[in-house]
Length: 305
Figure 1 (cartoon, rainbow, N blue to C red):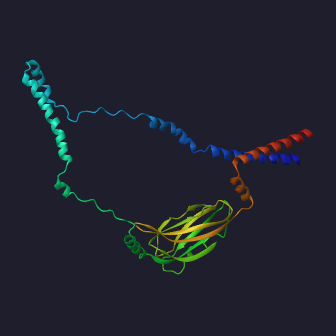
Figure 2 (cartoon, rainbow, N blue to C red):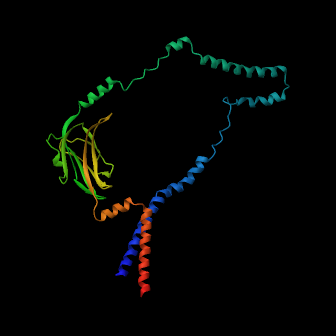
Figure 3 (cartoon, helix red, strand yellow):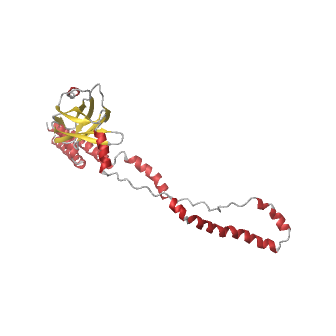
């Protein structure tokens, strides 16, 4: 009997040590970190590399191509005083005229100042008259329709369940017919537009939508929104439904519903919950302790023989 208990302790210790080691490796050495580390050396030289030297500044006025031919005739003929005096006069003329032209362009005349258009006045988008007109025109397009939503009365930890919300824009009196009918159902009415978005949120849940979040209301059948929800902790937690009217220029919240779901933990889920909430280091140490206890039990049993 002691041998069986020791073997079970060794197996349990190995399993706990493996789980704890895997959790530690995932926490301190995540797999996603490898691409970032390998990509970093390529980025550092680019960031720290000195900026390329700017190209040499060239004169804005390119040299004329024709003076190359007269050079030979000038060198062959003797230079006179007129030749030396003529070149400075040609170069100084444009240099003195350029600043004067800039000054003339920089100072507009009185006629230009009078003809310049005045800057447009800023429009205050918070003007109550403007927002009231937009809101009234948008509200006039809304219509009242029956809505219903269904959530389970209780849920299991780490076990997914379905949540459904329905809107009936066909002219019927109730939207309950579109729900599965296996949980707690609540009905009501809401003002909606032709395009509606329904969101589901809850801090203690993982929520995955399984239907389009934005839908155009159908005159033929009920519109339904579905989500797959998984509880992350035990206890009573709220799920919140939010209805939004979607327009071309704005999204307006219309109605909010809240349902309370009781999350229970039992059996194997209790051990899973403890392992998820415990520190991986403690799980690893506990596994190593179980292995050591099992080995000591086996050794003691063998030495007695």
